[in-house]
Length: 322
Image (cartoon, rainbow, N blue to C red; front, side, top):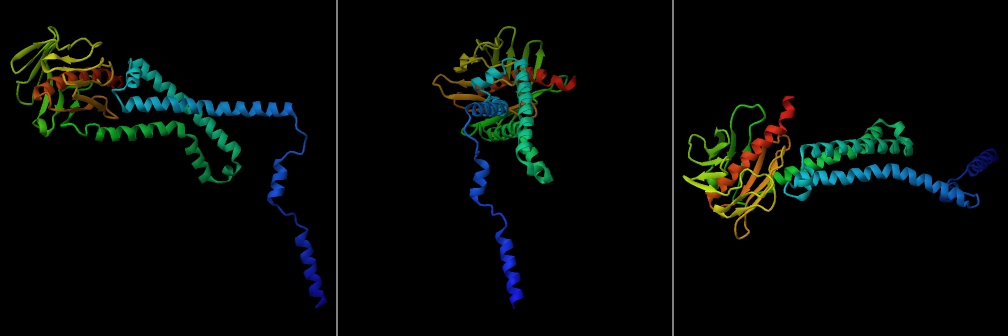
C-alpha cells in the first residue's frame, strides 16, 4: 500500500514539473525584454512599410483598374466607356496593363501567404486554397465582369416596349447583317445590304421596301420620302433624325467597338438606347426601343445603328482571321 502511494506521489511530482503554457507565457514571448530603441523601431517601421507598399500598391492599382474595366464594360453609355474605347489601341493597352499588374499582385500575394503561414507546406489542400486566393487579382475582375454583363444583358431593356437583337457579319464573312424585332414591332427579321457603294438598304427579309441610307448625299428614305439632315456620315457629332425629332447627346461611333447612343425625342423621352454587345462576340448587341416616336423612327434609327455595328464588327473580328 505504501508502495502505491509512493508511486502516486512520484507521478504527481512529474506532472507538476512540466512547463505550463498560459496566455502570460505567450505574451512574454511577444513582448521584448530589451529596452526601447528608437533607431531599431524606426528601422523596423521602415522595413514593414516597404514590405506593405510592395504588397499593397500593386493590389490597390489592380482594384482601381479593375473597377474602371468592369464599369466601362458594363455601362457602354458612360464617360468611362467612352474614354477606354477612345481608340482600339487605348483599349488593348488598358487590358494589357491590367493583366500585367494582376499577375504581379497575384505573385506577391502568393509569396506573402507562403511566407507567413508555415502550415501551408504540410497540406496540399491548403496549398491549393492559398494559390486560388493568391490569384484573386487575376480572376475576380473577369468573373465579376461576366456576371455583371449577364445581369445587364437580361435587364437593361426592362421598362421599354421591346428589345431588338442585332447581328452583324464578321470580317471576310459571307451573308447579311440582321436585326430581330420584338413582337411589339411586328416580330420580323430585317436584313441590311448595300445596293451600291455608299447606299444601304434595310428591310424585312423577302421584301425590298424599308429604309434606305445614302451616304453620298447624307440622306435617308423611308416610305418613299427622302429626308435630309440625318447626320449619317459624321462620326464626331451626335446622331440626329430631325424628321422624327430624335437626337443623341454626344458622339456615338467608337471605331472597333459597338456603337453606343441614347436617342431622345423632342420632349426628352428615351426612344432608343443601345445596350451591351455579347460577352464573346463583338458583332452582336441589343438595342432597347420605345414606340413613343412611331415605328418608322425605330426602324430608321436601328438600321443606322446596325450599319455602325457592321463597320465595327469588320474591325473587331479581324484579329480572328490573322
